[in-house]
Image (cartoon, rainbow, N blue to C red; front, top):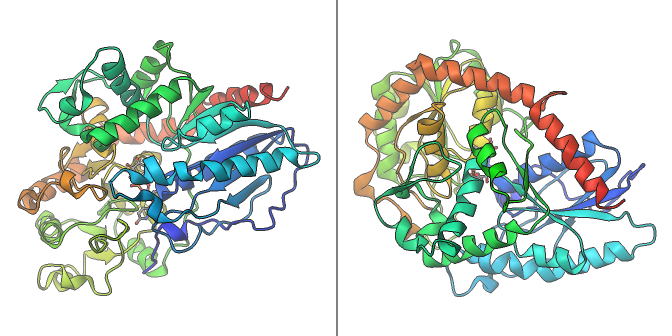
Length: 494
Ligand SMILES: O=c1ccn([C@@H]2O[C@H](COP(=O)(O)OP(=O)(O)O[C@H]3O[C@H](CO)[C@@H](O)[C@H](O)[C@H]3O)[C@@H](O)[C@H]2O)c(=O)[nH]1
């Protein structure tokens, strides 16, 4: 099995920092957060920019994840260099809180960013810095950019609707005097400008389900209102409603939809998985995969297995081992998955199913045999699924995934539901549905049948796939948006 975790992000730090600078006239400093779903997306965005315009070069500042034993592995890319920031000790996160990585660990890197940028500026023949491009969890870096009079851009790795939620939460608190924490723990629904339908509070981003998390969201959103612009990994034609709501609010910086920004190369495909998929009929396999951090307790694993067997569908299942208690929430691989599966499951399903560890997700979604995708609705997974025209069955777990699932199922009709309000919060066990409220085999079976059989959703997803591809092609909406964004960068140094 291919194993993948945070220290194996597929890039290599360019130690020599050697780059062909060519005719570069503007440098961008990217600061992604150290999570694969954010980091990979930011690197792909950086590649997109330098490939589109010879005048740009980019330095990506790498914050090593506190749970990683080594830095990410990255391959050098022309006009992009990677600078690994000195590693801060995870002890800066004491006393332990689920949000300490955002509120303590990432901010503890600000001083290193200041040093690197000061060094860059002092180099003879240095290229003028046109902007900081920061991740949603790196709002603290805006102060560093301001010290150097450098404009800040946010690269938002989730969708436009979720971005609007963050701003709306701040409006509720600051302008309407609402207690967002109380709201998030009440059982009601509210109208959020970037969602077509009222959003049930039980689907709120898990960040706002604690007072500390609410404070973090509020302070980030306040800072984001004052930055130069926001790049969102979305397609205007996919999230038209949300994009229009964002542009209608003049207190929000200009928003550039630049997606889908995807890493379509991924890791090499394992031969036996490919061979197995090659031998399955077109659109016959349901693929199950729950992102970089997704794993389930044993009782839930057994329900999934029963649901799969009852559905009778062929399946490719990425099954990962939950992390031990008190360890960073990074799942591992089972030596022998049969220890958590119902007795005889692997033998009974040998002809129709395959249980794997870390999945070659992009290659699986690209394969003809895959006809449906049971997903946690991490935004990259949503965009990848839509790119390949594979309908989703939404089974969100934590972060903003319940909101993504709600948008896909209820607002856009691009997915079916497995369970929209399921919670399995790896960062905060208190915010987790307990074992007695596992999603049942019957619910899973029903979701699988719907995702494999619902013709209406399938047709809409195929149309969205075509729209995603046109958006990034020359003349498309995202292509045009990236052109304007580049002009915006260049103006900063002219
Ligand atoms: O077995 C696996 C699991 C994941 N992936 C890839 O890893 C990425 C996972 O990204 P995503 O689907 O966005 O999930 P997370 O890793 O959970 O992403 C985090 O970051 C996202 C972007 O901000 C948020 O939407 C999520 O809620 C948050 O958990 C995707 O490109 C997948 O193709 C694999 O290739 N194989």
